[in-house]
Amino acid sequence: MKTIQLGYPITDTLKNKSEPCVMALGFFDGVHLGHQQIIKTAKTIAAEKNLKLAVMTFFPHPSTVIKKGNQVTKYITPLSVKKQIFEKLGVDLLYVVDFNMDVAKIPHDQFVNEYLDGLQCKHAVGGFDYTYGFKGKGDMAQLNIDANGRFGVTTVEKLEKKHHKVSSTLLRELISAGRVEDIPTYLGSRYALQGILQRKEDNYILYIDSDYFLPCPGSYEVTLKNGVLVTKGLCEIKSSDRPGELHIRMFYGQPFENTLPVQLQWENFIADYEMDAFHAQARFEEMEVSV
Image (tube, rainbow, N blue to C red; front, side, top):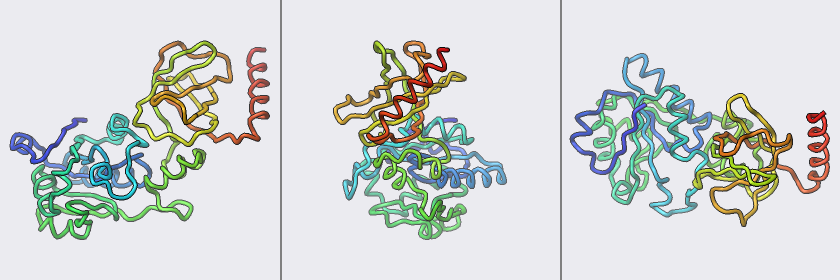
Protein backbone atom coordinates (compact mmCIF):
# COMPACT_ATOMS: atom_id res chain seq x y z
CA MET A 1 0.00 0.00 0.00
CA LYS A 2 1.24 3.44 -0.92
CA THR A 3 0.58 6.31 1.51
CA ILE A 4 0.35 9.85 0.08
CA GLN A 5 0.22 12.91 2.34
CA LEU A 6 -1.94 15.72 0.97
CA GLY A 7 -1.87 19.41 1.79
CA TYR A 8 -3.89 22.21 0.23
CA PRO A 9 -3.75 22.91 -2.58
CA ILE A 10 -2.60 19.59 -4.01
CA THR A 11 0.51 20.05 -6.11
CA ASP A 12 0.34 19.47 -9.85
CA THR A 13 3.08 16.88 -9.44
CA LEU A 14 0.87 14.76 -7.15
CA LYS A 15 -2.13 15.17 -9.44
CA ASN A 16 -0.11 14.13 -12.47
CA LYS A 17 1.23 11.07 -10.65
CA SER A 18 -2.18 10.00 -9.31
CA GLU A 19 -3.70 6.75 -10.53
CA PRO A 20 -7.33 6.13 -11.57
CA CYS A 21 -9.09 4.70 -8.54
CA VAL A 22 -12.22 3.88 -6.63
CA MET A 23 -12.10 5.97 -3.47
CA ALA A 24 -13.58 5.14 -0.05
CA LEU A 25 -14.27 8.29 1.96
CA GLY A 26 -14.30 8.76 5.73
CA PHE A 27 -12.28 9.34 8.87
CA PHE A 28 -12.53 5.63 9.73
CA ASP A 29 -11.62 5.81 13.44
CA GLY A 30 -11.78 2.22 14.68
CA VAL A 31 -12.31 0.81 11.19
CA HIS A 32 -15.43 -0.85 12.61
CA LEU A 33 -17.92 -3.09 10.76
CA GLY A 34 -19.61 -0.08 9.12
CA HIS A 35 -16.27 1.27 7.90
CA GLN A 36 -15.29 -2.18 6.66
CA GLN A 37 -18.51 -2.35 4.63
CA ILE A 38 -17.61 0.93 2.92
CA ILE A 39 -14.13 -0.30 2.04
CA LYS A 40 -15.35 -3.73 0.91
CA THR A 41 -17.97 -2.06 -1.32
CA ALA A 42 -15.28 0.14 -2.85
CA LYS A 43 -13.03 -2.91 -3.27
CA THR A 44 -15.74 -4.79 -5.20
CA ILE A 45 -16.30 -1.85 -7.53
CA ALA A 46 -12.54 -1.41 -8.01
CA ALA A 47 -12.21 -5.07 -9.01
CA GLU A 48 -15.12 -4.76 -11.46
CA LYS A 49 -13.58 -1.67 -13.06
CA ASN A 50 -9.99 -2.92 -12.84
CA LEU A 51 -8.98 0.17 -10.85
CA LYS A 52 -6.87 0.84 -7.77
CA LEU A 53 -8.63 0.79 -4.39
CA ALA A 54 -8.02 4.06 -2.56
CA VAL A 55 -9.00 5.38 0.86
CA MET A 56 -9.07 9.08 1.72
CA THR A 57 -8.91 9.99 5.38
CA PHE A 58 -7.92 13.04 7.42
CA PHE A 59 -5.52 13.77 10.24
CA PRO A 60 -6.02 15.17 12.79
CA HIS A 61 -9.74 14.72 13.45
CA PRO A 62 -11.67 17.73 12.04
CA SER A 63 -13.19 18.43 15.47
CA THR A 64 -9.79 19.47 16.83
CA VAL A 65 -9.54 22.17 14.16
CA ILE A 66 -13.13 23.38 13.90
CA LYS A 67 -13.57 23.09 17.70
CA LYS A 68 -17.34 22.70 17.65
CA GLY A 69 -18.90 20.24 20.08
CA ASN A 70 -16.90 17.34 21.49
CA GLN A 71 -13.30 17.23 20.30
CA VAL A 72 -11.75 13.90 19.35
CA THR A 73 -8.13 14.04 20.46
CA LYS A 74 -7.61 10.33 21.21
CA TYR A 75 -8.21 7.60 18.68
CA ILE A 76 -9.57 4.06 18.72
CA THR A 77 -7.08 3.46 15.93
CA PRO A 78 -4.19 5.94 15.75
CA LEU A 79 -3.12 6.68 12.18
CA SER A 80 -0.24 4.19 12.23
CA VAL A 81 -2.66 1.41 13.22
CA LYS A 82 -5.26 2.44 10.64
CA LYS A 83 -2.61 2.10 7.95
CA GLN A 84 -1.99 -1.51 8.95
CA ILE A 85 -5.72 -2.33 8.90
CA PHE A 86 -6.25 -0.68 5.51
CA GLU A 87 -3.39 -2.68 4.06
CA LYS A 88 -4.90 -5.94 5.38
CA LEU A 89 -8.23 -4.95 3.75
CA GLY A 90 -6.50 -4.71 0.38
CA VAL A 91 -6.20 -0.93 0.00
CA ASP A 92 -3.72 0.10 -2.71
CA LEU A 93 -3.56 3.86 -2.11
CA LEU A 94 -4.04 5.75 1.15
CA TYR A 95 -4.53 9.50 0.88
CA VAL A 96 -4.07 11.31 4.20
CA VAL A 97 -5.28 14.91 4.12
CA ASP A 98 -3.60 17.27 6.57
CA PHE A 99 -6.75 18.76 8.07
CA ASN A 100 -6.29 22.43 8.97
CA MET A 101 -8.32 25.64 8.74
CA ASP A 102 -7.48 26.05 5.05
CA VAL A 103 -8.99 22.64 4.33
CA ALA A 104 -11.95 23.31 6.64
CA LYS A 105 -12.87 26.40 4.59
CA ILE A 106 -12.91 24.69 1.18
CA PRO A 107 -16.43 24.84 -0.40
CA HIS A 108 -17.92 21.42 -1.08
CA ASP A 109 -17.73 21.68 -4.88
CA GLN A 110 -14.12 22.84 -4.76
CA PHE A 111 -13.26 19.95 -2.43
CA VAL A 112 -14.60 17.52 -5.03
CA ASN A 113 -12.69 19.23 -7.82
CA GLU A 114 -9.43 19.20 -5.88
CA TYR A 115 -9.42 15.99 -3.87
CA LEU A 116 -11.57 13.60 -5.91
CA ASP A 117 -11.56 14.61 -9.55
CA GLY A 118 -8.05 16.02 -9.17
CA LEU A 119 -6.79 12.62 -7.97
CA GLN A 120 -8.52 10.67 -10.76
CA CYS A 121 -11.33 9.25 -8.64
CA LYS A 122 -13.57 7.28 -11.02
CA HIS A 123 -16.03 6.16 -8.35
CA ALA A 124 -16.54 7.41 -4.77
CA VAL A 125 -17.98 5.34 -1.92
CA GLY A 126 -19.07 6.82 1.40
CA GLY A 127 -21.34 6.15 4.34
CA PHE A 128 -24.87 7.57 4.44
CA ASP A 129 -23.76 10.23 6.96
CA TYR A 130 -20.52 11.31 5.25
CA THR A 131 -20.13 15.09 4.91
CA TYR A 132 -17.45 17.24 3.32
CA GLY A 133 -16.61 20.83 2.50
CA PHE A 134 -17.11 24.08 4.40
CA LYS A 135 -19.44 23.55 7.40
CA GLY A 136 -20.16 20.04 6.13
CA LYS A 137 -22.55 21.36 3.49
CA GLY A 138 -21.63 18.51 1.17
CA ASP A 139 -23.30 15.14 1.80
CA MET A 140 -23.70 11.99 -0.29
CA ALA A 141 -26.68 13.43 -2.20
CA GLN A 142 -24.68 16.59 -2.93
CA LEU A 143 -21.73 14.47 -4.01
CA ASN A 144 -23.77 13.15 -6.92
CA ILE A 145 -24.41 16.74 -7.97
CA ASP A 146 -20.82 17.89 -7.46
CA ALA A 147 -19.52 14.89 -9.40
CA ASN A 148 -21.46 16.16 -12.42
CA GLY A 149 -21.00 12.89 -14.26
CA ARG A 150 -17.21 12.83 -13.83
CA PHE A 151 -17.33 9.81 -11.51
CA GLY A 152 -19.85 7.45 -9.99
CA VAL A 153 -21.12 7.63 -6.42
CA THR A 154 -22.26 4.81 -4.12
CA THR A 155 -23.77 5.38 -0.69
CA VAL A 156 -23.44 2.63 1.93
CA GLU A 157 -26.51 2.61 4.15
CA LYS A 158 -26.58 2.60 7.94
CA LEU A 159 -25.44 -0.59 9.65
CA GLU A 160 -27.17 -1.51 12.91
CA LYS A 161 -26.34 -4.11 15.52
CA LYS A 162 -28.56 -4.76 18.54
CA HIS A 163 -30.67 -1.71 17.61
CA HIS A 164 -27.64 0.61 17.68
CA LYS A 165 -26.03 2.36 14.73
CA VAL A 166 -22.49 1.07 14.33
CA SER A 167 -20.34 4.17 14.69
CA SER A 168 -17.08 5.46 16.13
CA THR A 169 -19.14 7.55 18.56
CA LEU A 170 -20.82 4.43 19.94
CA LEU A 171 -17.48 2.68 20.30
CA ARG A 172 -15.99 5.62 22.19
CA GLU A 173 -19.03 5.65 24.51
CA LEU A 174 -18.60 1.95 25.27
CA ILE A 175 -14.87 2.30 25.84
CA SER A 176 -15.39 5.37 28.05
CA ALA A 177 -17.83 3.39 30.19
CA GLY A 178 -15.46 0.43 30.48
CA ARG A 179 -17.85 -1.84 28.55
CA VAL A 180 -15.04 -3.38 26.53
CA GLU A 181 -16.79 -6.77 26.39
CA ASP A 182 -19.48 -5.20 24.14
CA ILE A 183 -16.97 -3.90 21.57
CA PRO A 184 -16.73 -7.01 19.30
CA THR A 185 -20.39 -6.70 18.30
CA TYR A 186 -19.66 -3.42 16.52
CA LEU A 187 -15.93 -3.59 15.81
CA GLY A 188 -15.89 -7.16 14.55
CA SER A 189 -13.07 -8.08 16.96
CA ARG A 190 -11.83 -7.34 20.46
CA TYR A 191 -10.67 -3.79 21.04
CA ALA A 192 -6.91 -4.15 20.78
CA LEU A 193 -3.86 -1.97 20.88
CA GLN A 194 -0.21 -2.48 20.12
CA GLY A 195 2.83 -1.66 22.19
CA ILE A 196 6.20 -2.67 23.56
CA LEU A 197 6.13 -4.74 26.74
CA GLN A 198 8.88 -4.15 29.28
CA ARG A 199 9.32 -6.04 32.54
CA LYS A 200 9.49 -3.98 35.72
CA GLU A 201 10.27 -6.23 38.70
CA ASP A 202 7.19 -8.48 39.16
CA ASN A 203 5.00 -6.53 36.75
CA TYR A 204 5.09 -5.20 33.20
CA ILE A 205 4.65 -1.83 31.56
CA LEU A 206 3.19 -1.72 28.07
CA TYR A 207 4.39 1.35 26.21
CA ILE A 208 1.77 2.42 23.69
CA ASP A 209 0.99 5.31 21.36
CA SER A 210 -0.28 8.10 23.63
CA ASP A 211 -2.97 8.83 21.02
CA TYR A 212 -4.88 5.64 21.90
CA PHE A 213 -8.37 6.08 23.37
CA LEU A 214 -8.35 4.13 26.65
CA PRO A 215 -11.13 2.75 28.85
CA CYS A 216 -12.15 4.59 32.00
CA PRO A 217 -10.10 4.01 35.18
CA GLY A 218 -10.60 0.57 36.65
CA SER A 219 -9.38 -3.01 36.50
CA TYR A 220 -9.57 -5.03 33.29
CA GLU A 221 -8.87 -8.58 32.29
CA VAL A 222 -6.63 -8.46 29.21
CA THR A 223 -5.09 -10.91 26.76
CA LEU A 224 -1.58 -10.30 25.48
CA LYS A 225 -0.29 -11.86 22.26
CA ASN A 226 3.03 -12.12 20.51
CA GLY A 227 2.76 -14.55 17.63
CA VAL A 228 1.78 -17.92 19.11
CA LEU A 229 2.59 -16.76 22.65
CA VAL A 230 -0.61 -15.81 24.49
CA THR A 231 -1.27 -15.06 28.15
CA LYS A 232 -3.82 -13.39 30.41
CA GLY A 233 -3.23 -10.48 32.71
CA LEU A 234 -4.78 -7.73 34.79
CA CYS A 235 -4.47 -4.13 33.64
CA GLU A 236 -5.32 -1.43 36.16
CA ILE A 237 -5.92 2.03 34.72
CA LYS A 238 -5.57 4.98 37.06
CA SER A 239 -6.13 8.65 36.33
CA SER A 240 -2.61 9.30 37.64
CA ASP A 241 -0.98 6.99 35.05
CA ARG A 242 1.60 8.51 32.74
CA PRO A 243 0.37 8.93 29.15
CA GLY A 244 1.44 6.08 26.90
CA GLU A 245 1.94 3.56 29.73
CA LEU A 246 -0.23 0.65 30.87
CA HIS A 247 0.63 -1.35 33.99
CA ILE A 248 -0.04 -5.08 33.76
CA ARG A 249 0.24 -8.02 36.13
CA MET A 250 0.40 -11.46 34.54
CA PHE A 251 -1.65 -14.38 35.88
CA TYR A 252 0.59 -17.17 34.63
CA GLY A 253 4.03 -16.21 35.84
CA GLN A 254 6.30 -14.20 33.55
CA PRO A 255 6.00 -15.73 30.05
CA PHE A 256 7.22 -12.77 28.00
CA GLU A 257 10.75 -11.67 27.39
CA ASN A 258 11.76 -8.10 28.13
CA THR A 259 11.09 -5.41 25.51
CA LEU A 260 8.77 -7.39 23.28
CA PRO A 261 6.16 -6.08 20.79
CA VAL A 262 2.71 -7.37 21.78
CA GLN A 263 -0.97 -6.86 21.06
CA LEU A 264 -3.22 -6.22 24.07
CA GLN A 265 -6.90 -7.13 23.85
CA TRP A 266 -9.39 -5.74 26.34
CA GLU A 267 -11.59 -8.60 27.60
CA ASN A 268 -13.70 -7.54 30.60
CA PHE A 269 -14.13 -4.78 33.15
CA ILE A 270 -13.76 -6.15 36.67
CA ALA A 271 -15.91 -4.46 39.29
CA ASP A 272 -14.50 -3.88 42.77
CA TYR A 273 -16.74 -6.52 44.35
CA GLU A 274 -15.40 -9.08 41.85
CA MET A 275 -11.72 -8.38 42.48
CA ASP A 276 -11.17 -10.71 45.47
CA ALA A 277 -12.78 -13.67 43.73
CA PHE A 278 -10.95 -12.83 40.52
CA HIS A 279 -7.58 -12.72 42.26
CA ALA A 280 -8.34 -15.98 44.04
CA GLN A 281 -9.22 -17.69 40.76
CA ALA A 282 -6.08 -16.30 39.13
CA ARG A 283 -3.93 -17.66 41.98
CA PHE A 284 -5.62 -21.07 41.67
CA GLU A 285 -5.03 -21.20 37.91
CA GLU A 286 -1.40 -20.17 38.40
CA MET A 287 -0.95 -23.03 40.88
CA GLU A 288 -2.43 -25.45 38.34
CA VAL A 289 -0.03 -24.25 35.67
CA SER A 290 2.98 -24.60 38.00
CA VAL A 291 1.96 -28.16 38.88
